[in-house]
Length: 110
Length: 113
Image (cartoon, rainbow over all chains, first blue to last red; front, top):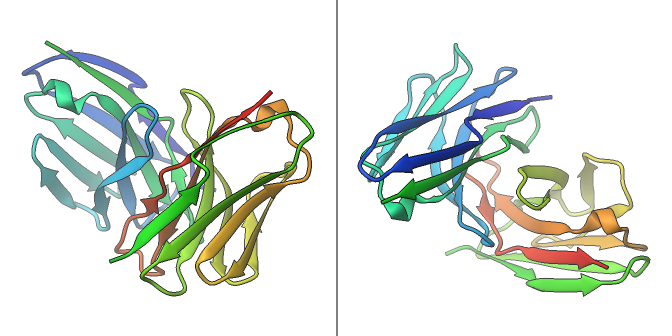
């Protein structure tokens, strides 16, 4: 069974700074997802990464996937307060399901 | 376009009472359907998934059950709720193709008292 670990679990950063969230997974997975969750809300899909070396960017967020290292990263550039949320990575399991990391609670302070 | 509906949004139930949460998907056929639970401040735990009518895979042994009576309907049930069943329940769907992410419903916040 696929296990997914994220770090850090809590991240407090100042506006304008850069930071990276890491997502390691235990076994071979052919797909990796990133989601955002605002407090009390559902999950919103951010990125779907399907191949080694895949890189996707949306605004101040950029996600990448290294299947050999079993590592995905979510890089935040010049953070703004609106990015405050919990970010989850999830890996595709053997069957048709997805296993989540514990989430990274990001707080961006002025 | 495809949409996913989940209800109710909020539910407060006494211990020992039954539960029925419903999820429906519109605008697609033969979706893969999932039930996840999120405890307060925690990650998501996969409870059940279904790849077709009447096909249910259970990931966690517990007092919950799931059913898929129709192609685009997924129901989460319990005969007797426990305090530990409290949480945020999320339904999700995806196409069979792996190129797409999962789309989540708006969630049901269940409090067992």
